[in-house]
Image (cartoon, rainbow, N blue to C red; front, side):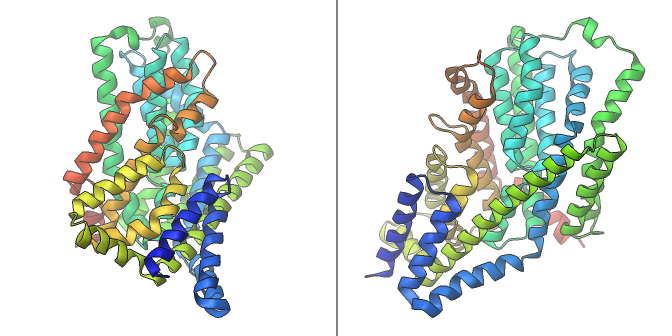
Length: 442
């Protein structure tokens, strides 16, 4: 049996197991171990899984993962994140669509605190959505705002998904995070511009808050501003030393976790329940990601041993005579297709052993491609009929918002994200400028 056929059999078997409802890491790890044992016997087969585990345990930047997740959950569970929305409510309520714009700002800051899109969706749907609906905002527009804004969690640093990509692609986490800053802020700015333009054309979609709600004492406004800026200060305390080169990435993540914990204690919100929930959620998510990374490394090692990447590259470039850019675009389209029934980590782990080395062989920058993958994943999250975020939104939205509303709400935001993806593809410097500037400055 040829190696190409073995690689195809591995990939199809893995997809079949996933369709039966098996856990992602279980399906991928099982196929990797069975294939290794059948190909190389007891000695070589066992060594592949063992070496993948040792590689994972020795990857020092992985320590950032629990630190950032803990920081996000502390800020969320202690309700410090709620203060952000109160600040936006008071300071931006006088603008048409001001609360929707504030919601995008809230999502960017939540992304900078947690790095998970699910956290942004949960906070947006429980804090922002009821307030927006109560004040007469168009339900379809605001539903799209929350879905689009929450997707920024996997792009704006500290993105947990980019940590996973860094491990699989063997790229520096710090450079990937910096590469996501400008595209993430650009996408948030495009969302805000869309809200402003649409509410200017049709003011009924985002009415101005009544004067009675905005006319509060200046001292109260300043208090809300200070409370809302606290998470920003925590993020600055964490990231500025790292960007300046004073601390390593792991040290900065520890500073962020300690700063969030200290803020919750000083505000009197660090209860036993908050601490237990934060630690339990941090442990659960961290263990999930470690199992996924371990399975992906084992699967990738078998694929590398088979030479599958070289074979597929030869198929695309020699037999089908496709250009590198055509292959890259086909990869992105496959991510959108897979996003109709898989989440971001599953998509990355399934195709990373194939796509990431192939991208390198085609001559593309793997840091830049990590951002392309992340943006494409965001689009896949919200692409009907089975986008991950669509059903997550349906589970969290109030009864008056139907699935049809959710589907129709996301169309303009998906178009904006496709536009952003094209910009990053055509102008790679949007993603690579900041890491090049920080890491290569004299």
